[in-house]
Image (cartoon, rainbow, N blue to C red):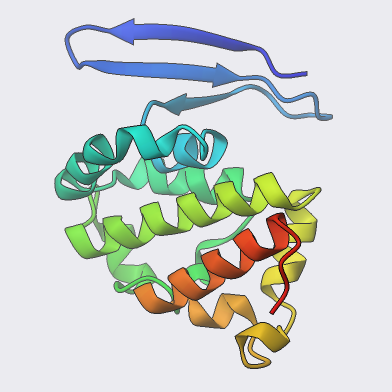
Length: 167
């Protein structure tokens, strides 16, 4: 069961949402509104906030928000190494990422949010990402995520799965 509470910090104009997930040994996770991990959790809400997300991309994603996204998706930085436009070692040195890297992080968040919505579990979605797809030229969807066009192809395929429209 998820428990949501809101807190607003008027000085920073930020809203935090705490989500408690009933898993053994897991504590509640605090998602700052419009952070990449918030986008995963609220993927259906994000279309109305696209202008805010554009501003967040321009400001740059904080390293702490990137780390939270990795943790929330049960992933590692190494898994996203070929997808991100910056090397992992250069990302570890920065506290805020550039526009291009931030945009790719938000694309990942949006895609994972859609995937979690369509597939039964996180593991099912991650397994699908690593399985060759005939509709994607027998390539693994994850291999295509190093470009915006690849993201679009993978996103369209997830939407087809959602509505049972197979190519």
